[in-house]
Image 1 (cartoon, rainbow, N blue to C red):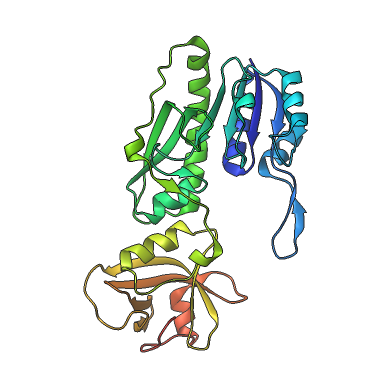
Image 2 (image 1 turned 135 degrees about the vertical axis):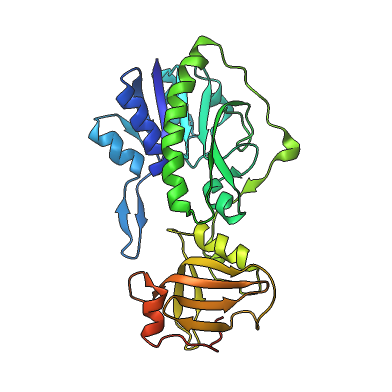
Length: 312
């Protein structure tokens, strides 16, 4: 079977690697986003998918837009039997969706129809889900609206971070892909339409979501810190105006109000506790400006935060 693979980040690279290492498929082309400047130094970086593709001498295409006649002509020349998409970052036009014999399938990191969109793993943690997963669907012109072909679910622990869940799901998705393609080719899969009334959306995570809003509940903030670890991180402002990133926390009391939101109620050898709109949160790991992540107890011992301080 001749496959064109479309994907960009590490999540997608795991699926590409699984296809290649299975030895069962011809990867006719790998399509990924153009190299982009990243980080503080704005160094131009290639995607994780491109990095892997180059190690296996796979042909790489990096169109700015897949909707151009030039790119579509390239695909028609290749004539793939199947297009596999995973976290690619562009919508495919109908002309491409209709091109392969077996259509286009998408490896999506949620239990559809929940969390359609760009950041399903972040949102599963942010919303406090107890279960997450991967769905492989037959693509249509909508955003993650196609009929479902297969699913795998995993439990989400109360302390699990976005990074940890991502690493679990990328491997689960890769395995599911290898299980699904032979059934698709054999015609033994029964596509299941998504129930629209159950659909929810996971829009892009933006930098204005990073700041801790202490008027929220302790549970909501705990989920935010987990959801934004390792990216983009959450922060609060210290009394001197400096930023303090907040990484690990524990819900000390889920209910009640023991002080104005943002008030440091206690600072000791375990960390420091902060009043929330409802409940109290114990900060266990933080990161001062220009420093590495550290136990919150070390930050307290350095005299940087004390009982009675107000965090903004």
